[in-house]
Image (cartoon, rainbow, N blue to C red; front, side, top):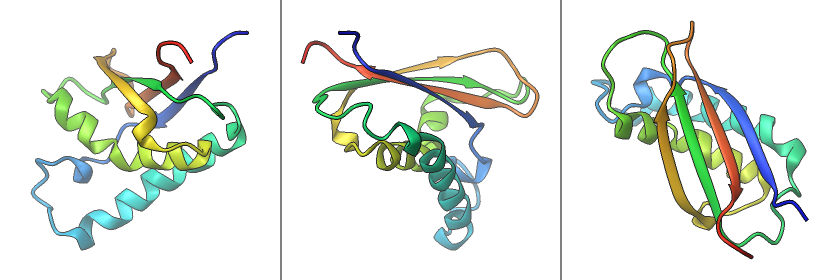
Length: 124
């Protein structure tokens, strides 16, 4: 039996979600958090039973930035928290099942994007 895997394409995270954003007040960030969580939920919920019974998962995030501006990989990852929460809710899993995280930069793409790949980690 082939281990389950799942690839999700999401837009590049809104800059307000970055921990380094000057707009730190929750009231300013909340709409962007909700939009990111809702989009990931809607795109992942059709695959709800894919990871049923899989105790350990690994996630690979490949960031395709919208331009050549310098960015921190750890801040890009932190900006994805709401999207990862929405994906987990849509798939019916708990984010504590994610045991390995891999972060990568991809090529610059117009508008930016993030490719999120989720698959089984280790053996069952």
